[in-house]
Image (cartoon, rainbow, N blue to C red; front, side):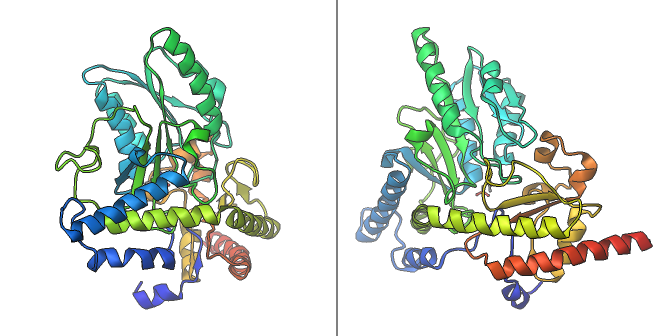
Length: 403
Ligand SMILES: *Cc1c(COP(=O)(O)O)cnc(C)c1O
């Protein structure tokens, strides 16, 4: 598809995969591309101006999540933040081996580092979720061992929108750690992958009780390949990138000042608009779900019920007798962009591990379709989708029956 066609696609329903950059974000970033372009480590005025912008962005992010500036490390996105958190904690153990806990429904940015931990001799536990994708505290309690080092649970799932009880887990681990301190056992660290939640969920690290939190810019109307890792003071990590020692030695490489500035602004906008957008998007999501359910017999929602521990912008369906990929291509012909399961697992063409984990059958997984809404979604777009959608289901049904 050429650029001209892309400009005509005003029916974008894939905000969980990528968001358009907010014009305000673009505007604040621009001077750092070609006016203030110095290396933030340089001592001259160009460098110092870049450094000042970098540190102002760090402070802004810190205050938005109730952290201290020195607890924020800029990275090149969610994948890098999650990798640094997990591999960094494991690396800080030196030659010791530990026990690591995560859930079955994590993003590959967490699951792949966990596989690497298992390959290198650590013990790993994958918590099962319930049928709606929620992790339970009792399962976590049962999984804990005396040598547990890290618990990594995502804040909200990118495929089915399930919001995990992060603050509850944080409080629970806090109590566990108080007991462990009496027995001279090391603290269990808590990481959350918060890449889907800014703009919808609370991000105060003190209220969540996390030691590590990963956030990216590309899902919150900021630049792609931008992100940060919150690292609570006193948490020891081994860096993955070795070099000039930038970001307090935790992330070497010339700082991407424009990305940091854009990320800070994106997070600020997300936080400022959190209540209003949550309300607006919830209503649109509910409206779309009602229209589709009324017009398409046998449509099934995967994940938590709407309005209950679910991101308000996420609708994940099993289509009645229609493959998700077929529907995606038909919708695309009408300028409507959706996704099947997770965009990341599409490349490999294997059934979504998230849908498997919540006990969706392999057959139903093939019929999976994800619709995610965002800031630019309007009632008119919802109506258009709800008009085209049932027609295409009928059309595909009749085509398949003729074969
Ligand atoms: C997108 C996403 C990531 C990866 O972030 P990148 O910025 O693409 O590296 C990690 N976790 C979740 C939940 C995501 O949605």
